[in-house]
Structure formats: C-alpha cells, structure tokens
Length: 341
Ligand SMILES: [Zn+2]
Ligand SMILES: [Zn+2]
Image 1 (cartoon, rainbow, N blue to C red):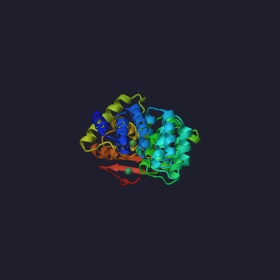
Image 2: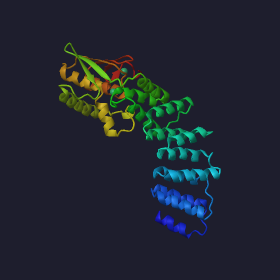
Image 3: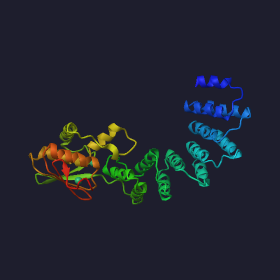
Image 4: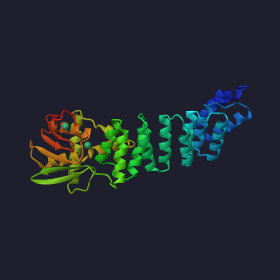
C-alpha cells in the first residue's frame, strides 16, 4: 500500500479510478479512517465519485462502525443518483446493520426494485448481528418463497445459528444432521419450516437415540451422552473401531454436520452419534458373530450408514437397524437398502 500511495502521489490529476483504487486498498488493509480521508480529498479536488466508490466507502463505515459518516455518504450517493444501484443498496443494508440501525437496513431493502442474493444475505446478516433470530428465519422463509435458492454459506450459518438460538440447544444431536441434510439438498425452506415449527410448538430439540438389546435387556444411547456407567469402555471401543475402520478405508463424512464448527469438532460429534455408541456397547457385550439389533428414533445419517457397513465386514457381524424411515440390514459391507433411505 505504501508503494501504491507513492505512485498515487505522483499522479498529476488523479481521477475516480485512481481514488477508488486507493480507497479499496485502505479498506482491504483495514485502514478505514484513511479510506474516509481519501474520500474527503477526492471531494476537495472536485473528482466525481462513481458507483464503484460507494460500496467500498460504505464497507469502511460498516466496519468502523461509523453511522454518521455512513449516513452522509448515503446522502451523497443519493444526490449523485446512485441510490438505485444494487451494489450501493446492498452496501447500505450491510452498513446500517453493522451500525445497529436495523430499521434503516430494512428501509433500504424495502425500497429496492431489484434484489440479489447479496441483498437477502445482507439483510439476514444484519438481523443476525443483532441477535434478531426470529426475524432471520422469517426473512429466510420469505427469501425461499421469492424463489431465491442460491444461498451463500454465510447465510446458512446465520440461519442455523438462528435455529440454535431459538431452542435447538443441543447442537450435537441428529436433529441438526437432519436439517443439514435438507439444507444440502437445497431445501432451504424446509430447514426454516422445521425449525419454526419446533419453536412455535415450544419444542426443543429431539435428541437422537438408539436402543439396543443385549442379553435380553434394552439399553438406550443418546448422541453425545457421556453419562453412562460404562462410558469409558464405550468411548475406548469407539476409538478402536474407528482406527480399524480407517485402516479399511473409512473416512468420516462430515458433510452433514452443522456448518460453522471446525473439522475436528465435526468429527468428534460424528463419532458420538447414538448409533455408534450402541454398536460399540453391543460389540463389547455380545459374543463373536452374534447379530446386533438397533432401533432408533430418527433417520440415520450417511456417515453412520457408511460406518455400519464397514463394521459389518470388519467385525463380521450382521447389524439390523430400524430407523425412522425403514429397516437396514448390514452384512458383509453392504446394506439391504442399497444406500437408498
Ligand atoms: Zn450418525
Ligand atoms: Zn441402509
């Protein structure tokens, strides 16, 4: 940036292009005050800003945050006729949101004739920023209804955070996996619908559990639970199983775990799914070659499915799982559902 500045100094009559370049550079380096000063200089020299100038400046105001300057710049852009520019508008939504002026964000959004994915994203982010989770889901629902499907990952993160704050407290459980599955299938509105329904009915999250029968007694395992008396042994077994499975080519499929947590955490959560706990317990306490039977309350996630296929061949066990949708019979590394469930 120093080099760019020195070149800039040498330009006799810098135009809007040169100024935009400098402003962008300062914003990129987070020299936000510097960017605003550059703009003042631009105006003093009588250089007319263009539609590329404003989004960058508004970004500077959003990140400072500087509401007063932001409003001034909004005024300038209006005077110069850029108020209908979609990039300027998206930047305004973002700037007002970051400055905590959610009403002004909404006002800009309402006035827009044409909205892009970025407009919706900015509005959702603005609400998420203030913890207005219900509104986040509402806007998200509206977005889907308007046929806006191409969602950025950041939006999904905001929406799922909203879901989490609105009562889905146990992030680890399979219910989240299920809504993620919908999300992956681009059924965004379904995700929002499920969560809203849960909230409106005052339901918190349904924890995923698996029942397994061992020596004529039924044991219940809840995802992520570490409160069993035999817990230590089970988690040791899980560790051992995973090690052997990886040797055979298994790798954890973290694609259905909540976005926004790191890879290590994702793997951690996957390995504590109730079905795996139940299998581990059953392998410890039943005789070699005997059949394992599990009943679970929710649909099996794809990782548990792959995992169980591997177990059936590595440990030479037939494993029957009845999940919410159907029966699965795992034997010799494949499942009776032919991976369709
Ligand atoms: Zn699972
Ligand atoms: Zn299956």
